[in-house]
Image (cartoon, rainbow, N blue to C red; front, side):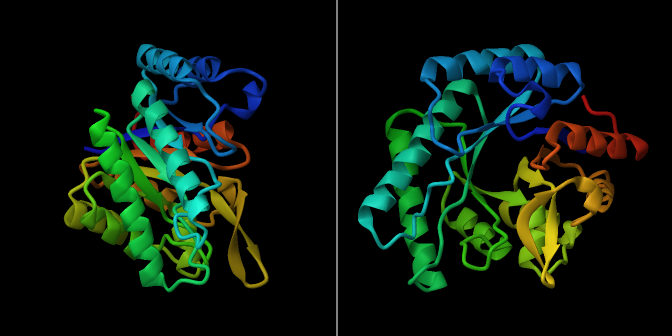
Length: 276
């Protein structure tokens, strides 16, 4: 039977100005069970606060994951930018470990002047270096999630994230369903992707984002929209998940994130699934 963790990306809009601990309590009160801690503008949270968040999450039954800063490019031709990117990822790892988060979403890099294969090798080498440092410092239980990306200039096709996860222990795909939908020209086969993750990687848990994307000038672009735009549609994913014996986190990145997470919850309930 499927086991689903559903919640918002960051502090709910209705709680803006409040802290993450208040957000975790609120998420539990509205009967959601997951939250992604956002470090997208920089890792500014202390290790002490991270531990306190973990305690709150365990108290309220909320599963945590983390989003690393946007300012990461492991394919940069500038060595200092690569080193800064690795440092930001590792700082995210430290906080994730303290709070008991299971995975980190990472926008790994942009091809730029390099070929896709050159960029792949650069990202792989950097991730191995970070994982080695994690092992040296006794950090385990946190996966580096390479996110699928919408833009053609970015590393992060479904094939790339599956390949790097096969080759580097401790790396997993962080599936952004709408990014993959856009990258594939407005098409997505949920069943095929889930089957690949299960069969090729033997994942016991899948981390993912969900929202809709804006359609502009004949294509889908990485501008987030509410889930009622159905780009991609959520119901077919829900139907596919309910046929599987799988565990998954669905983090809603819609502009109305907690409201749309509740819409997603209602769709799951209409199909007979009750969020625990």
